[in-house]
Image (cartoon, rainbow, N blue to C red; front, side, top):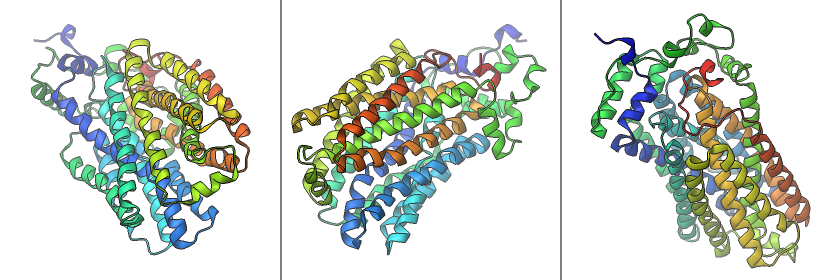
Length: 480
């Protein structure tokens, strides 16, 4: 008979089976999801100018196409997180990819501006669930080198951005924007088909009290990786460290009770005393990092023709089929490759918090010189470097957000934080494009600098480092 000394937790089981073939396949699937989202986000750089020319849109109508996407994402990020926490990661992924593929293909058949606007908003609503792919993958990975493996998803994101810029360069001048929209929706369709072959997260199953299903899943992982599970019986974190009476206190709901809560209860848990500081800091950081990162992305186009002659910027942006637009976006996307490598090297060596601080400081140092007009080479180099470091910092934040929340609110918590970031994404065009086009480049850069400084200060107030820390399944252990 096995005694209590032979009991093991889910984290111990995952550490024993290690990272192997099973996790590699899971990484590829989650990577396809991120590849698809990256393509749709980079698509914003090309569709607006093309549609404006064909349908004679006003500048406001053109900008609304991007705003509609971010507006849909604002709602979708938390919605899909909630669905995934309530009904499982696998169900969430299937719904996300189905809506994304449908909205993407429908966009390509839009007969007028209004229908295109609705389709793009619906697409934004769907692709906002991309963070669920990350939560799903995270729950299969052992704690050792977890940060580096999670950051491997960024490789697929960068590939998606570069691929979108490449096919836009080829397709737009020859076949037009409708074909680009249709082709860009194809990866979502691939993800939808693959989603019927993926397993449910073992951590989600365990949280729901489905111990036998969890054990079968762990056995499958061990078999695929050609390793063995620990000897003994599988137990939960709660059974190991929490008294039964403590787990029933208000604001500290048991995982088994989570599914019985209403939509608003998830929000109450995120704002409970144990998670309040973490939640508020993540909201602020997602807002500031999104604002700064997408601001640099948009300034790349706004400043790509040189800023000494302010009026020339508008003329440059108006040429939707000018190859310089594709070149500048393509080169800017390449900045994220070294950013990905830097983040991968740092996160499991010096930790998530210190990595974010260092990367944020370097991003600030590179963006401040743009407060005065620079020549084209210097401007491009500074924007390249700033995007590289801000991308690395933002990416590290997305990993930290998923690790710091317990399983019972992981997807909804990171989703709500992502929603706050989308507000920053909706506002930043007013600064990055509006002020620069209005010949107020200095004001725009100073504002970005202030936002980045706020980010650095907020990072200091996180309670703990997640490097090497086991994931938790409930709010009580997450607060410890």
